[in-house]
Length: 451
Image (cartoon, rainbow, N blue to C red; front, side):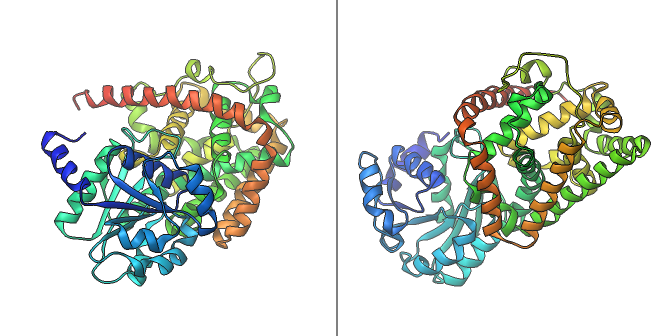
């Protein structure tokens, strides 16, 4: 939150500075509305063929829609490219040379390597480069969420200007390099996205809406279903950009597919001792600090049980190996990745991923129950097999860097769930709201503990 002196400085800057947004998709619109409602002069554009429709749709907004990126670039003091990662090179090559003299250019794609490369390739030498990335989706409030600012090439005056502009988001600012950003976003998102994308594909392949089956009833199942539906309720390019354009993500998604395969192989071989050994090593590596200190867990079954899409009456708990969640933690162990290192840069989704895996691995006897079910219960083996195939297929798509195949697989699954998406969004949004409030309270309590 800006203080009185900063507010006065911001007011003076607003009289002389124009903010340009190239790409008025969900996040571009979020920024355009936030900045213009805070008093900044904002112009933006989307695809030129959408110009008339966008002018009409947004005629009551405080920002102005221009015809294309040339018009935005030539009048803007800070130009933000809010486009798909796969298109950043093409779009910057078109509009970058039109950038206003001594202006600042940045982007908010999920992977910064191709973004910075495009800026360096196509922008005039006099242009400053300061990129940003709000680590959350457009449906989440910006307040209190992580915001990465990357000062790649600028002077102190311009860097201060961008910081003052971003202060209206009320986000938690983190300063990183482009390389650091890409490594951290891969660490906190690649494996977990692969898990929940694979769940959706597996359910589609076996033609099952999980909320109509007793097997997927319970607190952990509610989180798995709600998170998977939340991902498939978004646009495919949000996840494809991170997975395909970020080299760090490739290795992690491959490791997740390998971890799923390794654990499933031990399950069908009946090698309970080896399965238990592998998972306990992973548990102690990732969650040893929680178990040793008997730290209170973020989530519990009573909380998670409230947010169910289930259409079946309550019944006895069904067996489940929770292979998808076991493989997340096993992958972190194999990658020598400690997820808590990047908690300040984590998305809301990641904090909930982490909370549910904490719950599974640290709740007394729950991990042992999963291991026992994985070895002795065969009724869900065909489901787990489809999950293994799905995880390996996502890895293959990413390895071949195929945006076309990624979109096809994502949208086929999205279409399978479309009739239930509105209800899933409603229940999922309420679950996220409550859990994220609990996250804030939990982390505030943790920060008050004297180490």
